[in-house]
Image (tube, one colour):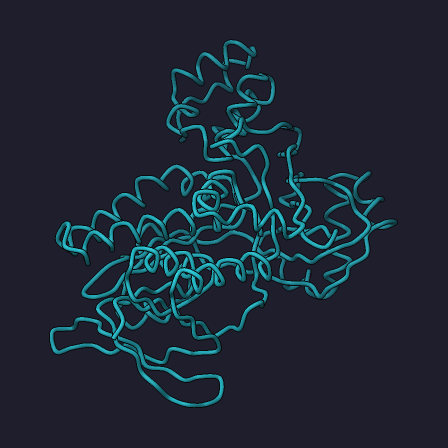
Length: 412
């Protein structure tokens, strides 16, 4: 009999398992994968996420994996360019983009070292419930083909946007909005571009950042309605988009870049939040709250809210406060803390800026002070309510001399 079973052992699941085990709870985490293994991902870890790893004693391990530090970021939206970096957060002056084969293995190992039991190659087929509907365990199948079940006081679903746990408990989505784009990416040698996040005219974007093994992840995005045509020649499509956004980078990509692994397509699920707690269960990570990959906040949020859920669950299971109250606080706090990121991601991931965001980012690009605040916002170290405060934007627009007709203070 376990205290907690975690379904899914990647970023959010292994983090929750580790933190709960460190608190003295008996924890089991299961995953269909075996580690190390890959999964579709942006790789990007914001300073706010790295801060969590630092507090947990794992950041040095990520750095020691050979993942290079990034201390300069390049963002552009058509003719708007923002270059720079955020001020340090908790002493962290760089960002990292580790391969998921690296990051997930580090977290799984840390969970085991903390006392959690991890079963790899295990597929959950259903949940065990009592007569009152309370979830008290899981049943599933191992990779070797044997059926088994495990029981616990509580079950966490950390099993992604298509969560089996969410399906079985009937967790409802809210704040839904359709995903706008598809993504193709792979790993390339021969490029030294640092971190690029470049959106061009014609609703197309390319991005690149360095990762492990002296490779660069190069990704492109376009609207979903272009996917069928793109698939016919994905390599050619990638080249075409990079060249269209920046011809100089396109030429270098053609002459110097060598793809070393298969292409990974992503047609992301829609943006949503889910009801994230109930009678004996909770959700975390993409199972609970999913958004477009454009702003790269998936991993960072998975770390942040795995910690938040663990804290509230420890309070509830330990008797410090009623369990339902603690879990309701988890969902409410998560929604409040992530509201700015969620709305910003939904607004700018369409590959075209609304007049409001065009005004804000165009003006910010003309102000060194506000450019620094922009990178602080991206890093999780500068509050969105201050960055987008109408009175602050009005002062910014006046300072940089933005035309009066372009001075949008609030979203339409």
